[in-house]
Length: 400
Image (cartoon, rainbow, N blue to C red; front, side, top):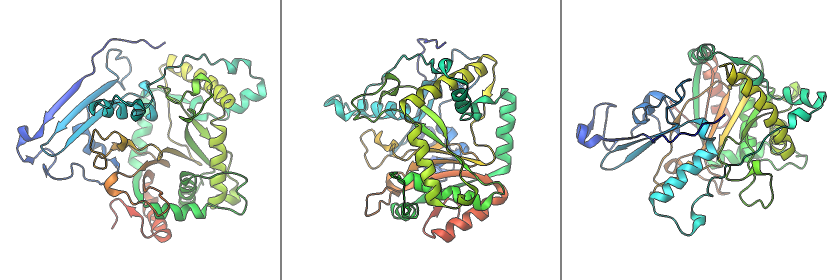
């Protein structure tokens, strides 16, 4: 059950110039300096925290905590808007639509309407497909969601996160459009099996081969966080595939097993990734997947247990925002706004379009990308050396 409450949205406002004058002693920089220690999209939590709203919606049992909070930090020459958005409200695409719509309202862009994203749509659909599935179909879908079949108590989950943080190190890279074009060419095969590969398919296939040169247990399954909404220009679709659906329209799509003799093949892995994404957007598959997933999630929620979403041994996970340019929410400063976030996990690839000032599009128009992931601590140097040997031009956070 989802209970709607008429709660205010908390907004915190800080004027740093008035508080501290020209010197921001709290984080050790002048008002004109870059407010974070990294010039990459994913920042350390300690750098982001001073600009985040203090919310508690992630705590169980606090039913009166708002699911959205805002914090505005002002200097004379810049403003940081920190947004705390509960996943209960929707996925990254829903959050993106919210921020762009907010930006448009700030600029008074109320006409023509196509200058703002589509108004959010709240579909009501009861998923019952799993109750009609035969035993073979049920087993096939259950095998596709091991991350949902296993759950943990909150203390157990906290311990897993603590262990991961203590044994892994982060790698953050920026790839220019030209470098992405090179990787895309490496993903092409004599026979692409009629598949139209994307830049991200090729990039994830390449990075999977990096992991497979480092870990003793290779990643033979690539999990993609698939947004199954219909394209904005679609003319026909089921209600639960509405392009502007304001919900969590994502599923974690497990690829077919990568054959052992193909774990270093960029073309083979890219094709396996693309096939899984295509399947993860077929309406019949989506309806069945959601139906089974709902059963597992409801069972866990009723038992006060939660799932562990980072990949397991032999897997890597992709969560790509490359086609979602967060700087569309520029509040009238197009080309000058910047987007930042935090959090990283082992063998979990987060992909973003680089911020405007660090953009280096290729002659083909391919935009540069920031990629963040973690590896086991003793493997970080090896992974970086492989990246450097393959593409010396790649920018790596903290590495000259």
